[in-house]
Image (tube, rainbow, N blue to C red; front, side, top):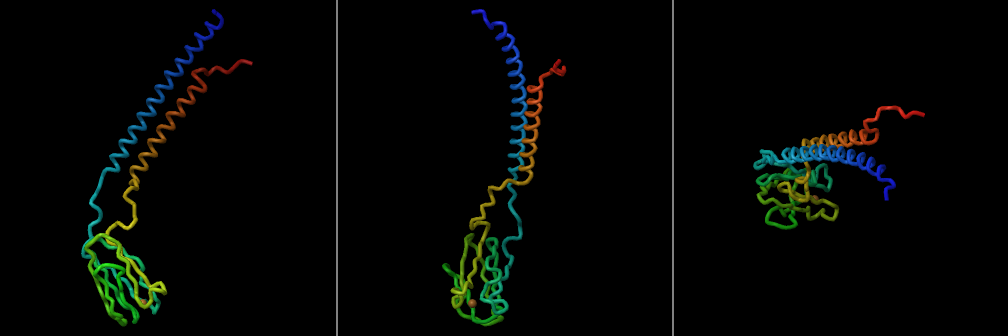
Length: 191
Ligand SMILES: [Cu+2]
């Protein structure tokens, strides 16, 4: 009945002290983490309207440059209201849309130009009819859509805040570990 009571009592005392310290350390770490999260959310909250200079800009696509059976560049991106101009660098090509009411189906010679203004945010694929099988295909992406998926990326400021919060948490926990491991006992164990 009475065996170990004194030992248990002192052990409990030590345990309580450690737990209290752990609670304090954990609380500090949580607070640091919460502060970091809040700051990160604030940092990520600035939704600026994006770059100006969208509508009205003209992007040039070379048609068959150097006699090669390609559109160069093969894929272009414009903002809604942006214009794409195709410039024939060699003859025998056209710009035939996969769908939609645009493009230039007639075969043209070098020096011809065709331009179209894209208002709708979508992806427009097209081919050169005579050379589609040779891989003379192209695409116009209007807007930031088309599988970019970059809207979920955190701004760098939020990332660094997160790292700072994590570092604060780790250092707090490290300090806690140090105190728990070595206690306040700085005496060397006598041998
Ligand atoms: Cu062609």
